[in-house]
Length: 612
Ligand SMILES: Nc1nc2c(ncn2[C@@H]2O[C@H](COP(=O)(O)OP(=O)(O)OP(=O)(O)O)[C@@H](O)[C@H]2O)c(=O)[nH]1
Ligand SMILES: [Mg+2]
Image (tube, rainbow, N blue to C red; front, side, top):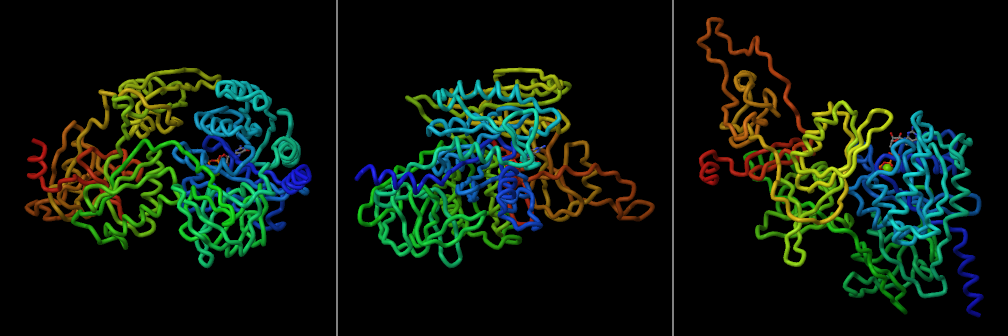
């Protein structure tokens, strides 16, 4: 009898493969998703398909990186392949940790030239810890500088370093060009499509073993929103069968139970969802009707509810204060600016962005937001300003922890790739920030590959410095490594700011007069207020100027125009650069239209008093 049930459950599951596509940033995950969707004809013939179609968020398209993990399902022969595209940037590692629980195997993409990079190690470690079968995909094999032997060598070492078990060490290898939609089992030639990859997936990645005969339960690993159906739980059905109309309970992380009815049930089909009547264990389901559902909650049969342990993910390392905007320009450009609106929005974010933590502070106008890194936080800031929010943020701070009575701070593994000509300058700059050199290599292409251990704190602002020093050629990646002794030698920005003393419109005349004092971030005509930061000073202290003065009219030509003045174009800071620039006594004013750096204390006398 038992045997029979087992046979049924393997049969029900045997046509399913649940796969996460994981890799370092830019190694081609989303492009491979395109190729897979194309070959399985999710798109009608001749229908135009956008590049990196899974990167559907505006910010993903603009930045060219994946921010959120997303599901898609394709059919290959009689096999249903549930795929999860994941982000490769270290700041979004929380997304990968979370969705790996939906997968039974992973495709580990590795760039055919770069080989394994820091985030390759991070995501592989997570996959191996779950005992997953990992297929190695050497992608971008079309690159003229591809070096597959080197890549495979390094990959073996990496599996070894991460204590992969014998089965995992014996990983299958597929060579692909996601861009061309081709694959093969050898590196010397490519077949005309991805059939080799599909065959390896079907044969090497195990079907799910989730028991169908048990009562239904599912861990919520993602949320999907629908105007009519509400917030829906996404997860792999861990046991049993979920049916439309079924009575279920929602169990939150603390085990509190609430009763609900499944009002609609969906599965992925291509990149969309379709309504179904039931979903069996091992398949990915989207469940509507569970009120208040959050990531980490279990949804289970109300007859026999069993809680599933939620995913533990690594803790945030960086935090920032989000506060109301109280500058003289407050409320002029944003739709939502009250502390209640900002608070609500931040707490809502925390429900889906699970590596993010939001806390109230002593002040009702300030909230402490903790994340995985600068990009994790800046993407939230950019998203909020596009939604019409107006607020201010302070300098990012690392999160300390106390370990057996000793205060520790986070360290990162920093990897650098730069043409050799610039490596001297780069090494000098990182030395100044107490980076500890772990490894140094010179490639055949005369590129220096450097690896450092560096305090997260000393990393803030380093990117823009290295980009300047290397004329934009440096490639740098960083990844949380470990907590270690608190550094005493914190090296932040060592320059002061040029601060406005007046309010009004900036004149070229004033900018010209102060041009030898530093670099300006603002241009002629910009509205300013006292205490607003106009640029970076040359010296290591703040200087104050009157930026609105114009030429006296006593001149013979009696002209108020700025004839003959040559103004160096201002250095307009991006959001990330603005955040990196901030000193402790400065804030960034964020509105849908503007980014303004300002002194916390706007009044010059008050500021001087506070300094004493
Ligand atoms: N030459 C070549 N370029 C590729 C290939 N696959 C992807 N690329 C390029 O690599 C870049 C990054 O590709 P994505 O698919 O966005 O990489 P990703 O791994 O999804 O990146 P993240 O999601 O941000 O981690 C794009 O410019 C692609 O066109 C390939 O097979 N060959
Ligand atoms: Mg991507």
